[in-house]
Length: 479
Image (cartoon, rainbow, N blue to C red; front, side):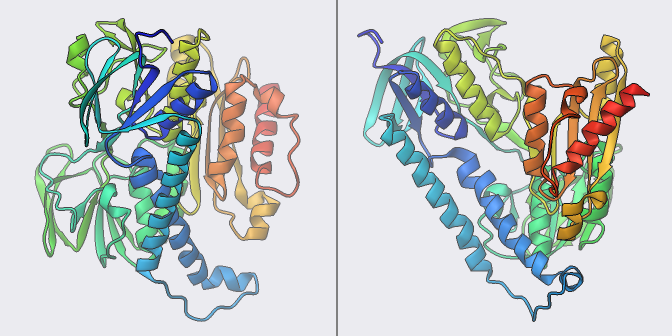
């Protein structure tokens, strides 16, 4: 670092992406500061991944202990199972506090300067911070924007944070409505439907598109409908728009046909969770000082190396990562992006391979995937001139899943017919969120189904579901 800069790197935003970038920057010898105006850890730690998984873990135990048929099949008998809503909520709150503290301490231990306040770009290689102690301007050789995202609430929906709310409020579990509507059937909607039904609520799930779980592979969505939706107190309304939602007691929801937008039904429920996705938090970041405009959705334009761009040209020394870029709105993707940017700053240019980044819904059972769905793979094959194959294996034939009494689920491997290259893997079943990493790492290394078919998996483990899939795939190419 030359004398004209206060820092080698200043990071705006201390979420998972900013934190990962800061740790790697220090490891690479860069003098680093991180700016945060709200809670350390960003959305993931405070309002997303961490508290929601705590709620899913606790509510999942309740569901398991109340599944008398499952327990009796294993020779176990229990009396009445009860739970304390407040204690479950505190479990999530305490976990957030612990991880928040761990994250902060890890930065301090490595001498990363934590600056409290609102950070914004103030020109090339300059950052303005408006904090409790006034304003200051920092000179930075490089700047990373890691400002994250916020829940998206469609027009016509009024949120009061009590009876109509987003996931930001839902993770507090302030109360358990007898009947709750959930708008959206993506990750957030599925996970909270799992929590609420386990704790005794009835759910109505509203999806504007023509099928539930529209972003998931159709084969996985079909199984999910059978094991996550149909056996539970969940009513589904597909192809319906929540045109207007009014808070109160009851909450009034005006449902319309998604195509005609004509009102067809009025729902009156106790509460409504708006799980319609997230939008980037990119307002008031000072981007205009360097001539940068976000796109119509608010995402910051970046190139393949995550340099912020103006009309396709990179702005010197300015970078963006995480949800603000819209590349892949996952915490671990943001961390990978932050590390890649730091590598590029250290003259080791690095891009992120988004096709090998896994994703998961932590429902019971879990859902996970990496890469393309089968239809996306078919489209790619048509465009590039290769044929696509897929194979499926089933948890009901797996010894460990049988021992656990958790036999619902499949693993699906999608691959090229010519090279055997893996294009996508999709899993629903016990431990799916852990299993997917074998596939994602294999894809990152460019492994083919021929390579994977000779790997050895411990017996008996659920990992053998993938082992069988790889072998089936390799055999299919020989036919």
